[in-house]
Image (tube, rainbow, N blue to C red; front, side):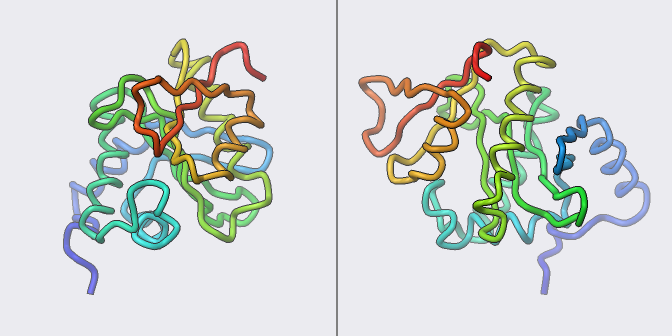
Length: 188
């Protein structure tokens, strides 16, 4: 049974939620559509963060912790004017993953974060989506830089940042389990 907080509230509340989601910019690339997350997306989000796939981002999380993480990604839009997107393959409407410009407790700068479903790997979807969100952060929000906080063991994520031209910028006093990659406007 699906917990109540994971279900839409019918009536006017659902319309208000839809109106708020409509205010989140929709980003489109050659193959992808990125739109505001909604309750229907939580199952796939949970399928990442609450399983072994979430090991590089503090997981596997409990369902409750996964919910709080998802809700925080969504709340960033109201609190900071940037937040998360759900990524879809436009041609098939298949949900692929999530990308965020987020701020969590302890973050000193806006983080460019991303998580993708296993069947979306190896097809360039993450690179395409992350580049679109990075460019939105620079071109629309006028952010000077973005950072990606990455578990040192997450070689795929590190390679993605490097492919996008981000440079390692890990502070000397940083947690040795993690690295910081800096995305700058000068990058391609």
